[in-house]
Image (cartoon, rainbow, N blue to C red; front, side, top):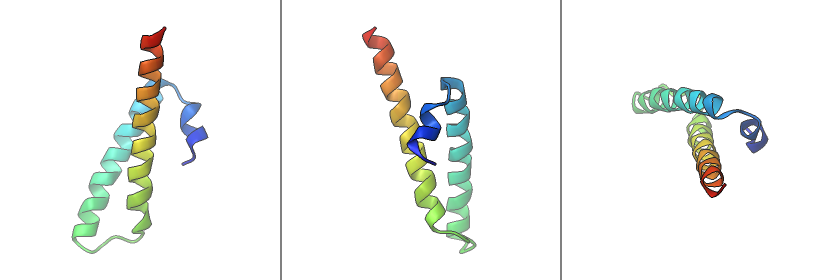
Length: 67
């Protein structure tokens, strides 16, 4: 997903999306271990999306603390 997709979401929606991505990452790891992974590039996409969400959450937290 693009960064703009995440910036439009609320904190609750980001948390929910983060949970879904972590579950997907877990499933992808098992698929990779059993050589059943259809799209290996998806592992990288999910990992980066998780990082984007965590970065955005940290930015929002620090911005709220600064106010």
